[in-house]
Image 1 (spheres, helix red, strand yellow):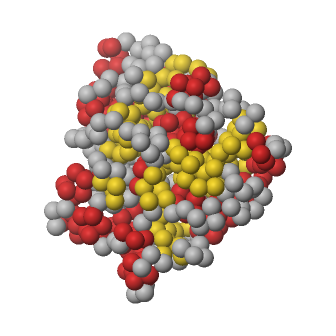
Image 2 (tube, one colour):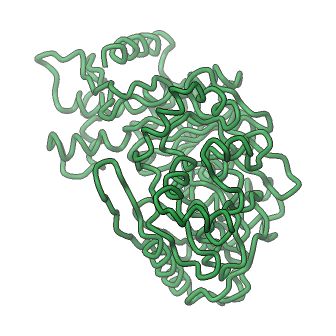
Image 3 (cartoon, one colour):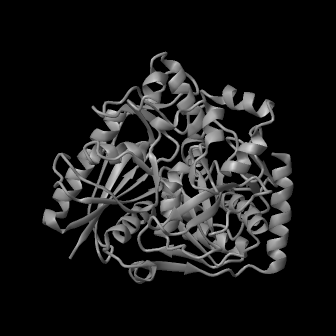
Length: 493
């Protein structure tokens, strides 16, 4: 039996899974690291703390699995996508703290480019909107922060990368400076059509090509482990994808029109659009999903996210004190057959795709003297699902595809009431996998393909296991009335 290691490097911690060829998890360890907030709107990570957390989780998961080191066939990496850092090419020492995807310090830079009329061109070349969320303006800021840093980057002394690049460099003892197409597509420096660094974008953000990693596919052998504590040398590092793309792959959404939703603090929906790059007229992002092997075609996805999903349940728990554990919301919401006319728009941090209304605020309508906490709990769950309906409606419009499948993962995917309402309002069957760790699973799939553990996607489909299906049962008239009430409430938010 061969084994695959998946490193899931997230915003608050690093999780390492050891899986066998049948996708049984035989080792799993999580290690957290500190968040750094130098000033309002700024978020940083110490790259050494990230590396330490990965090493801790790696050693712990391998020990827990109690396997022969020679049975480890591949290592895959998935990561928080837009977080950016610089390190010394020879010593691998970080140049400064990483700037995290949530960081807003370059908002003025992006606004200045927007005022110069550059947004349409940037969107045409990258599929992204001009926003400090993405890596390009972060790198430009880091190079301008220190007068000698730009010269060292131009000479190749400094390496830039997202977290995947940094981990490959550390895992390989500095022999590789690479990234994959899915992560590169989130930098705002790569042409989404060419899947290569775009000279005009490098000029726009004042970034030297010499500090950038080589763009590779999402599944091939990039390097081998060298000098990693507790890990044998010579293990192929053979799969990389940004976290949301990895979840799409881990859900076996291999065909055009298949989609997944990850329910976390927010909700992230990606739809596979095949080998044709999608252009959104509805406020969605176009992104690279993956590329299998150096000679394989690139696959694309439409992406939309709702800022608030699980966070709305936390609000009921912590802000209103309706229950003590988030998992209790399902039982409370099940006490009533419907919301009693209550509609809740969970726009606590504005509305994301496809509305893009940052100043919108949460709103609850339809309250009567008969409204109970159970009605409000149910309205929160329905509000999460209705936000996702807006995103999926935009995806159908932009892609020209109906949904072929809709798969779900993340913590709230365990809520059967929410999943049934999601199926009802989308009028689409929903599939929940047995293994909800789909982000890590996607990285394992890509690594296993790259190293020959599984030979093709058909073999992956055979080992992917379903937990439950939710079939829509709502009448067309009921759905129409619900959506009309929702649209009216969103207009007021």
